[in-house]
Length: 404
Image 1 (tube, rainbow, N blue to C red):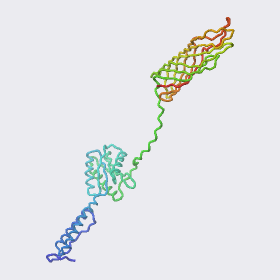
Image 2 (image 1 turned 30 degrees about the vertical axis):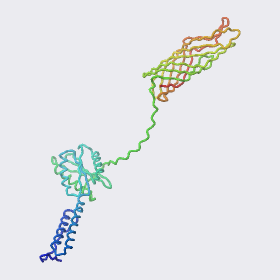
Image 3 (image 1 turned 90 degrees about the horizontal axis):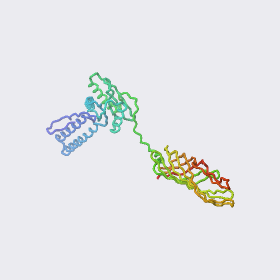
Image 4 (image 1 turned 60 degrees about the vertical axis):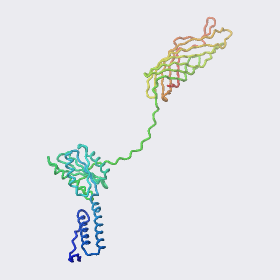
């Protein structure tokens, strides 16, 4: 086929180079097509409509060739973590940039903070960068051994793995080793991108798994019952009982006391007891015995958790009064009166904390009479004992102590 030019000469069609559709050859082919189409449209004798359609077609094809070729520039990303040594980092940066400048791979750089990190620390940083940047692989070197560097690769994919390759370093010469590291990085990156075998050896090391979500916090155990210091003013209310005399049954009543406990554990108290009157009968006469005990005490206690054991010494003054109820014809009634008996009263005590301000206490001990007397009846010169208070008697109390 031949084309008729405007000067009437005949020319053969210009040869057009073959292209694979990628790289600089593609740009050259499209440019050649555009120039040929433009010359044919302008110089040929075709009708104007055909000439302008040819020019429009050439422009349209050339405009689409630019993004199609640009799409081939990069479709993979790798990261290289450089050493902390500034000189070595700069040398590796230049060598890697030169090696990967024409490859369809995006290269990013990072850097270790120090060069004495162990492999697990280096691997942890590589994993973090790989996840954050979605990198195809992360490279770094271990140059702590001067004549034997190790190039490491964390390769992400269906199965994450760590690979390594040794680089021999001549004494005092690192340029060749730096270039070898750059070549290994380029070849391994291209192998990862194209799904080819990477010429590096696997390394056996446990990879750090992504952190598992934190388990739901367990409910907090119930707070222990708060306990007070048990010091300051105190009030006691409780049962009191003693064995006043062998001639009477066990005597029971209510004791009320107030006191103050110091930080050292020493405390003082003062109390009053309400006891039921006891009726005494002997033969032809009888009387009503009224007891009014008043006590003062001092003690010392120490706290052990909920328990506060203590020892206490009391002085007890008991006022005894007699009211005549009946007198036989053979007796002459004397006027009723009030007598005082004094007692020395040691106590052992134990308090159990129920809350910050309340404790349950129990105390027990004996009352030792310091002065003794008896209630008697006299006929002529003969005296008969009607009621003989005990010289030593047991006593207990149980009650609640409140610490306002």
